[in-house]
Length: 253
Ligand SMILES: Nc1ncnc2c1ncn2[C@@H]1O[C@H](COP(=O)(O)OP(=O)(O)OP(=O)(O)O)[C@@H](O)[C@H]1O
Ligand SMILES: [Mg+2]
Image (tube, rainbow, N blue to C red; front, side, top):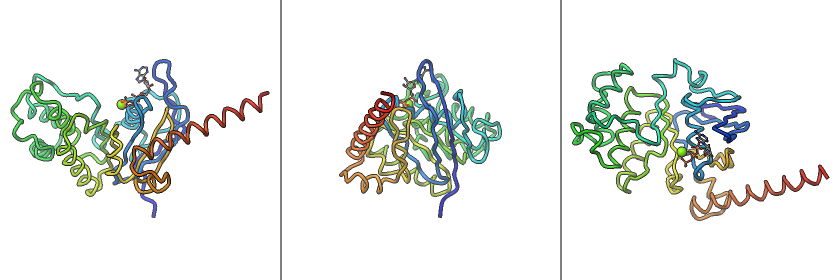
């Protein structure tokens, strides 16, 4: 049976500066699963996430999130976004940062302690955010995203700079959230993390070149690991494009 969609995007067009990042992007993201957004630097992962959470100016198309128009006020409490650079106040402690976020969202009193435990930052609660290690600040931005128990959590490269143990712990947390019915959209550069997702959107140059599952990705490409699978898909995509350009030239000649 098909799952309900958390995100439904049709004909999305986005320009950033002089770049046309998306020129008619269509995709859906199922509810209650972990969808991985993978692809090379500059392919549009952050732009797609910004479009979903409603902070990206779009030139056309439609973005529907949890049955509402993307960016609508009604989604404010239902959608959380952990950005690539941590949006944390360095001159406040970890706990003060979380308390501030909880007050903005009018989240329940116990939320701050709950998320501190979830990301394993209880011992750093009283420390100034500016004095945290890289991995610890990454976890603060994740904790901020968990405040208020959102239904959709969008995380831009949340495991960058984390050691393998912490990385595994965070993926276990993402899994626990998805098991509770939370929809997770997680971008990553690390192709091995693809195996931890339920669904994968592989992107290249503003297009989705595969909408698949980890198992189907390996089966369809015959590759031994996600990294080689992705390289094979990119090669195939290049050849298709070259062939399309050739036939367009032939038609116009
Ligand atoms: N403010 C901006 N002005 C002009 N171009 C931009 C701007 N922000 C992003 N771009 C361009 O839009 C394209 C998509 O960028 P985006 O940040 O979405 O990529 P990404 O897949 O998240 O990359 P990374 O993996 O490096 O984070 C890139 O070509 C980038 O240079
Ligand atoms: Mg990015």
